[in-house]
Image (cartoon, rainbow, N blue to C red; front, side, top):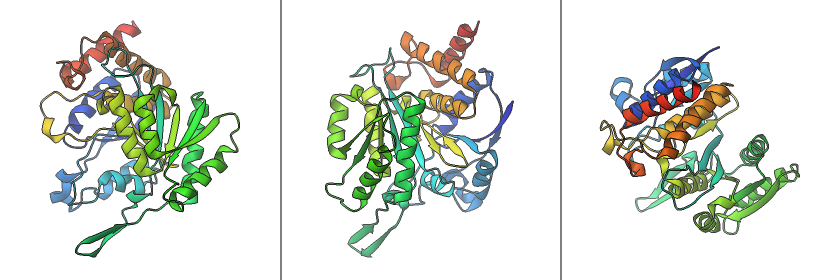
Amino acid sequence: MKHNITLIPGDGIGPEVTTATVKILEKSGACINWEIVRMGAEVIEEFGTPMPPYVLESIKKNKVALKGPVTTPVGKGFKSVNVTLRQELNLYANIRPIRTFEGVPSRFENVDLIIVRENSEDLYAGIEHMITDDIAESIKIISKKASDRIVEYAFKIAKEQNRKEVIAVHKANIMKLSDGLFLRCARSVAATHKDIAFGDVIVDAMSMKLVMNPEKYDVLVMPNLYGDILSDMAAGLVGGLGLVPGANIGEDGAVFEPAHGSAPDIAGQNIANPTACILSSVMMLRHIGEVKAANKIEQAVVAVLKEGKHLTCDLGGKTGTIEFTQVVIDKMLEQTN
């Protein structure tokens, strides 16, 4: 079966890691027809916006997209296109698996957890303004609908992957109304899933627990901001963002993308680690039912990392993006034969 999928190369190292991923997918046995669309700073001059209408139209039509990182200006400029994309397509669940890989230098072993991040509201709703020249105000939105939905999704993942526990992360001791609502929703949903253990941890305590014993945790579910911060922190425990894939899931579509940013300072130098993007495509393949191709790619990546001979510079090696891609392809073909 041929799948029509939107491809957003992104900017910075985005085109390099997505090109690597597409090459590997072509050898995986999955039949994909790519519809390539551009977004980000590079299209503003031409279209007057970082996200032309055809981007959303393509994803709505195809229902699935693979996306490279897109640069977001810091403290000025246009609104994050990543946030806009998630809001416009109602991609309410952000999923980031965090795991250790044998062969990759790390402080820990046997880490295998999933961070489930509410993706549509919280401080990322983008409701902020200047009260005076010296005071800025941002409004945090937490709703019962979004909270129920994301916790339910966390339990869905836990059941599908035979996970034993879901933990809700919050700050309800201080934000008694907003995070208090999230916690009440989490406890209410958990009460309908008696077969899976449930707990809740305050976000600052969770930060400490993760850096001390990350291998103890299974599925963590939390509001948007905490999920953004803790998933990056957790990535640092297993080798860095270059290893962490991501998925943005909605009721009518899904966008898969690496957890890392666009890293414009290393763009075009053939030193970017494409692993996170490759593993994001593995999540994508499973989403569309191409499980055999997904397993083939994942097994090849795991085998290459385990050997430790062809690591990219962020993992302490000297292998370039293009060379790493070819090694993964060779390993995939070797395992198939």
